[in-house]
Image (cartoon, rainbow over all chains, first blue to last red; front, side, top):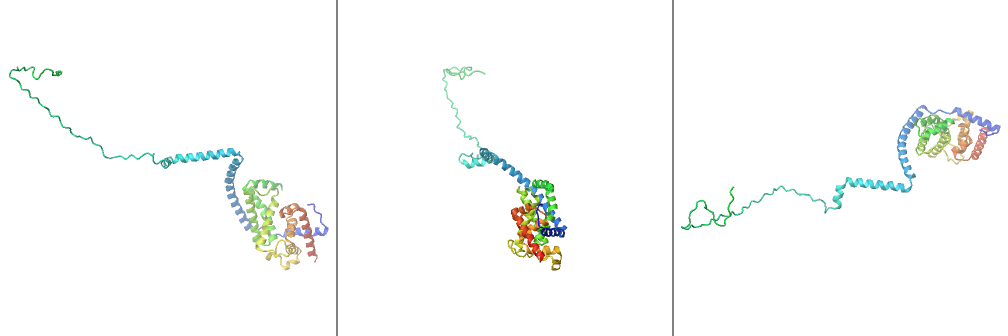
Length: 155
Length: 176
């Protein structure tokens, strides 16, 4: 301190400095209470500060990027988020967008179709009555054989 | 002061222990400063709490003291003292040069015979608020003209003028 005072002023200043010795101390109880409160405040603040610092750092990185870079990141994020959402809700979206062409629900019938057994009329064998004339010879080996009749192959 | 610079760097990086060290070092000093100006122990204690709450708030925002930790803390304390005085209406107005009522903590009439007690009464009752702040900061807290100017938000020449007027007034009352 390089102040120059008059001798009279010096005397007053010396008296003023004596007042310092008459000062009261900080009450110990109040001091401890304030100190403990400060410790609590700083603990909370440091935790909150570290989280805020992390977020601020990320924001700073974005702010330092050129505008086109930021746009690319934002658009990319938007596309990725939309894609993920669309994949997750793909079935719902499909039904919302096109209810007409949606896969129809297949109704399963419990009725087992049975083959219809409509009996067709059995042809009735018709017998041709050939009356043998008295002149015909009875040939036991040729019995039943006639001209033009296809010979049945023997087994 | 060298130690203060290290502390300053440490509290800027929110060093928990450094903040507590700052409190241990400055809380008693600020308490006495506040008590001298407001005259009420409870109010002085509140002011100390407010000063450190403000310091933490500034540090959290990345602001706070840049060079001089001591004058920074005194500056906050000064503003808190002024605010408390306004709210509790202990004074008749900080721009007025009238006497200041500080209640029970003023020395009693018997103590007026005592030289120091009389000096204290003159400071409290017969100086303007600016003069009182300058006298307390310069001669009781032993801060420089520059630091006092920073704390009160005035220029150094202004502080010298206020200081000289305050000393002249004290002398006048002591000679009566």
